[in-house]
Length: 348
Image 1 (cartoon, one colour):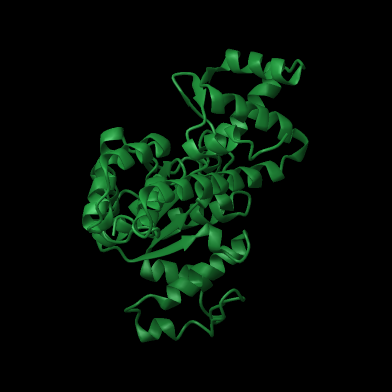
Image 2: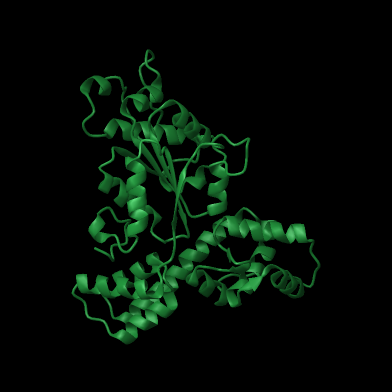
């Protein structure tokens, strides 16, 4: 169902992104493609693309959501990976016998005469797919992937919404990073264009046999602005309530969710919180060029700031996906984060 809130698994529930899906399936079929990076803003369908692509390609895969790991560490990742390997269907009994007892979230090992996790990976050669891979930055998992790339036949798929952090993880432009120099294919996910957003809602309501007026559709489209996740939230809620209530719910809960993600970012940067929020609030009101934004920032805070320091603040917001730059014009891409920033949900 198009309005299912969970990431899609079946192609019939996956809307519009046919070119991106075909690219992923081709990458999975190509023996020379070892690493695929799926990037894009939050809630633009990266997780669904990965899942649908893996199923369509008939790939033998292990899927790990970094947000669900017991801790963000290489040991936790490898334990989860081995747990998933053991649960794969169709493994030979002789291979399964090599694995000792498994307890979720607890140390997992192979018998001493085997090469632990690597023995299994080299034998099975699954696709290792990791959602929100940038969360594993600084854990050593990038070195694990470099070793898997060099020493096994495994393919690796990584998704990430914090595009700058994901670039760090894959070693882009950093010769000292473990994954630097490994060839990869990149797939970019974008918000839906206006006509496709409308088609998405119309198709979803038709599938659910729910009638909705054009006026209600247009009101939702104006507020949710092509972000598939927000459109899905509205559509799902509208199946059990009237459209006005569904839109009000989507705007409120969506803004709270978007701002909670920002709060996680700000929570690690409390000293500079006021400066980050000032930049975001200015951009929530108006898209700006770098120089215009810096000038407005200094007027708002009544202080001068060096170009390099201001650039660091703006670059961090861009790296984590809260701000984007198109043709040197900066903006807040998420309409509901904008709403939160304009509506006083944040405080300086």
